[in-house]
Amino acid sequence: MAKNAEIARALKELALLVEIEGKEKYAARAYKRAVRSITSLGEDIEAVANREELESIPGIGKGISKKIRRYLETGSIPLLERLRARIPVKVMVLDSIPGVGPKTIALLYHELGVTDLDSLEKAARDGKIALLKGMGKKTETQIIEGIDLVRSGLDRTLLADAMSVVETIRQKIQNVDGVNQVVIAGSYRRRRETVGDLDFLVDADDPELVMEAFSTLDNVQDVLVKGPTKTAVRLKSSLQMDLRVIPTESFGAGLQYFTGSVDHNVRLRGIARSMGLKLNEYGLYRDEELVAGEREEDIYESLGLAWITPELRENHGEIDAVKNGTLPHLVKLDDIRGDLHSHTDQSDGSNTIEEMLDAAAEREHEYFCVSDHTQSLTIANGMDEERLLERIEEIDTLNTSGKWDMMILKGAEVDILADGTLDITDDVLAQLDVVTVSVHSRMKDSKKVMTERVCTALENKHVHLLGHPTGRLIGKRAEFEIDLEPVFEVAKKNQVAMELNANPYRLDLNPGNLRAAINMDLKIAINTDAHKVSELDYMKFGIFQARRGWITKSDVLNTMALKDLQKWLKK
Ligand SMILES: [Zn+2]
Ligand SMILES: [Zn+2]
Image (cartoon, rainbow, N blue to C red):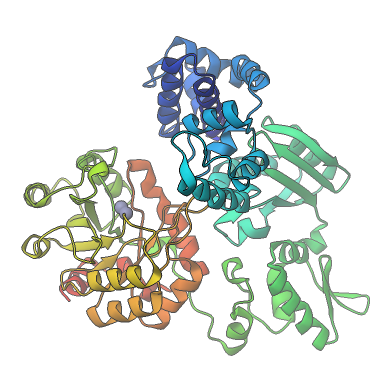
C-alpha cells in the first residue's frame, strides 16, 4: 500500500495550496475529504485503480480520480506542479507546526512573505507575527516552540510510516535473482520511534543486479550514489535509503556494525581489544585471521557474550546484563491476550462497537475493552453517566449474545479534571470493568500542579490505568511537565497500572520511563487506543517500544489470562 501514503500526501499539499490561494474553497474541502478516505482505505489504491473502482471510494469523484490515475502513471499531478510554481510556500512543513494551519500560512505568506521554516522563524523572532491581526504574542511564542519541535523531527520519519514502504522494498530486493538475504539495519532494526536514513544490507551473488533493481524502484526520486557495492537513493516521500552489498563471510559483522547503536558498538570494540581481537564492519579478527564474520551470533559468542536483541543495543546496561546472565526475556506480540483501550463511534472513533469487536476477534483476543471518552471531552462527544450506563447494558447484552468468542470488558477513558477529580461519579465507575484515566486538557499546567493533579486522580479507588501518562505526540507535541516518581509511588500504593500507548505518535511511556516503572514493580498495559479498526494493528509498535524498555511478559497486564486479569481488576 506504498502508493496510498504518497497520493494522500500529494492531495493534502494540493488542498493546502488551493486554500492558500483562496480561490476555490470548495475544492480544498473536497481534496481533504479524499485524503481522509485514502488514509483509512484498507487496501492498495493501485489495485482499486486497476479495477477502475476509484470512484467507489467515498469522497473521490471524477476529477480527483483522474488526478490519482495521473499520479499513478507519471508520479505527479499537473495542477499540483502549477500551484507549486505559483505559490512558492513549503506548505507541508509549515502545516506540521502545532497551531499553524492553512489560514495562518496564507496570512503569513501574504502579509510577511513567509515561505519556509527559516523565514517563519525570522518573522517570529523579529516580533512581526504578534503584530498581525488575530495573532498576538502568545501565538508567536507557540510558533517558535513549534518550529523547534518540527526541526528536531524533520530528517526523521516515524517508524510506522517508514515500515510499510520499506518492507515492500525489502521484498522486491529479496526477489532479485541471486539474493540470499536482505536486512534493514540501523535504528530501523533497533525499532526506534523514528528512523533517519535506512540501511539495507544485502548478501547477493550478483551485486550489479541488486544495484540496478534498487536504483530503478518506481518510488525513487533521485539516485544519490551508484557504485559497485553501495547505492543511495531518495524516495518521493523524501526518505533516504542506502543499500550495501556485503560479502557472505562478512555479512554478520556488517549487520552488527550497521545496526549500532554507536555506543553499543564502542563497548563491543573495547571488549574485543581487551581480548586481543579487532572488530570492524568486515569481521572479528585475531591479527589477520578472521575469527567470526558470517553470522552476527558468532561475533557476540566469540566475545564471550550471548546474542543481544537489536532493541536493547543502546548501551543502557545490556552488555553487563548479558555477562551476568540477567538479560530479560522480552515480551512478544504473541504474549498479548487482549487490548484494554479502544474507542467507537460513541465518542471520537470511526467504527461501531460491533465492527471493533469483529476486528478484535479476528486478532484472536481473549478479551477486549471498549473505553470511550467521557463528558468533559466535548470535542470527542464524550459520554455522560446516562450514556455510560446504557453502554454498560449494551455490553452485557453483547456478551450474552455469544457472537464473539471473547470477553467484552466495560471501560471508559475518563477525563482527569483540573483539580484531579474525575468527570464521572464513583457509583458509575464502580460498574465498569476497566477505568482508564487520562489528561486531555490543561497540558500546560506547571510540573507541580500536573503531578498533584494526576496523583489525586490515581487515589480514586475505582481507577485501574493511567492512559498515555506524559501526553506527548512525537514530532508534534512535547511531553507535558510531570514528575513521574511520585506518580509511580501513588500508582503502586493504589494498584494502578501504567499504560504504554501503542499509537506510533504516542509510544507513551518512553523506554526510560518504562524501565523506571517496572523497577517499582508497576504493571504495564500495552494498549492500541484504536480509534478505528485498522489501528488495532498498532499493537506491534507497542511491543517494539516495550522491548526497548526491557519489559517482560510478566510485567504486562494484558498478557494475563482473563481470569487472572479479572482478579487483578477487582484489586
Ligand atoms: Zn486519550
Ligand atoms: Zn483513548
